[in-house]
Structures are given as structure tokens and as C-alpha cells.
Image 1: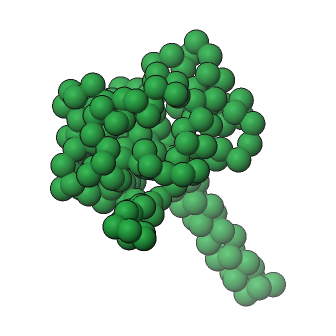
Image 2: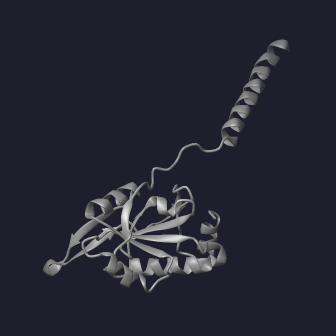
Image 3: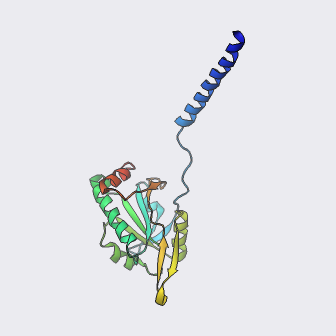
Length: 191
């Protein structure tokens, strides 16, 4: 009987050690940070230079697009506007950044006119092709110029809406395929 008890005792001790290790690991706060996002220096729709530090301390949304976009961008910007309104007074300081992927056509004046149809908390950002490309890369987004007939072009691009926390860390992408109040509740968890 004593010989049979030893394997059982080893098994029980092993389970206890495994349980202790698991509880220590699961109870530990996450130490890794996302590699989505990062420093940028761009120009807003009023012609002022802005950086990622201008949005520090407050959660914000980031969306990449362009003013000549036929459907995805205006639809998404309207959905973002609806979410900002649904946040109510608690979301008065939440900003949404609309970063152009078409700096050739989207200068500050073009952004200002285009964004006048949406919530004023949406900030249009542009810059040199290099500065925009660096921002696209920092957010692990995608954009590509696609030639069209007669010398015109369109842009393929990532259509995610990034949720960034007050420290500028990526939290996740905002699901806009639901009522605005539900999407707003997701953003409100960062406030």
C-alpha cells in the first residue's frame, strides 16, 4: 500500500506546483505592448503640424483613407461620427484621426472641406509621402496606388478603425457593423 501512495503523492504535488505556477502567470499583468502605432509627425486640416504626442493621455481612433474614396471612407467616417455622438458627454475629448493614404491629392484644404460633413472631432492628417508612408507602416496598415483609365488612380488601403488607449497603445479594431451605441460602449471602456 505504501508503494502505491508514492506515485499518488508525486502526482498531487505536481498538480499543486502546476496550479501555483498557473495562478502566478495568470495573475500577472501583461507586460508586452503592441507593435501597432507609434510616433508620427503630420499636418492637420488646419495646416498645423501635429504629432502622436498631441493625442497622448486620451483614447482615440485612427482610420486610414482618402478623400476620393467612393464608398468605404465616407461610410466609415459617418459611422465613426455616429459613435462619437453616441459616446455623449463622456466622449467629448475623444478624437478620431483620419490619416490620408493619398498625400498627393489630400492637402490640408482638401481634408478640411471633405471632413466638414462629419463630426468635428475627426482630425484629418496628411504630410509628405514619406511621412504618410512611415505612419502607415507604424500602424501596420496597407496602402497602394492603383492606376485607372485615362491617367487617374485610386487607392487600396486598410479599412480598420484602430482603438488606441491614452498611452497610445493599440487596444483593438473597432467593430462598426453594429449599432453605434454598442460600438461607443467599446470605446467608452477606454475612458
